[in-house]
Image (tube, rainbow, N blue to C red; front, side, top):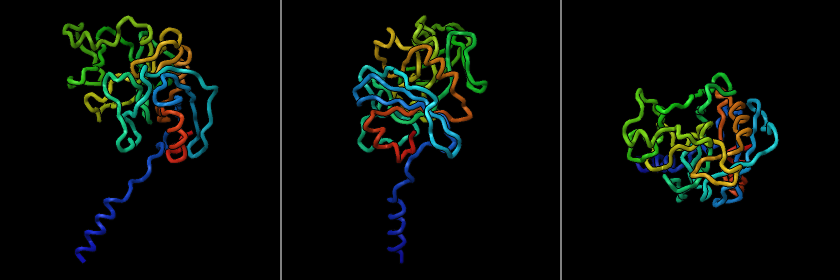
Length: 243
């Protein structure tokens, strides 16, 4: 009887966990698909649905750019396949998977957005830490003084860089489950050179498309970003209940 009891425990422990799927409360999903893991180009489509209903695109797809070296599995809501390569700081790859969306940051005093979407007008005192050795790695902080140390100056979000004058946070490797060195400061922001330049890991797009995306995001609908190569999207679409 004791042996049977331990066999039962083993069976329960070894049983597969419930398969992953998009959270039921998520009714807004931005889908990004790339040709393959090494592509820096992405096609973006925003989908919405009524609770329990089917997904429907809200309009035409638009183009964006990804990391210079393509994509790699990131740390988000999705399970990571066994043995898969995972994003690291400085690898110049965009994190693939399923991610919550955070707040918006920008240089303008106000932007068009849902009332509940948090927006921060970036000043010289707004910092985002990308040093994996920092206890504030991949976290935002507003300090009460002008930056003095090399660490503070390096972490300044406002660098007179128009491409970063408007951005929306992609919750890769995000608080409270931050893994040092697993990649930081992943945002949607304005693309460079009219879309002719790849990124260091962010997803970029034309300014008008970014403004339209941010204006569409409604936190109460738990908006998500799904970014995958086309083959992986096709593989997981039914199982994850993707649009």
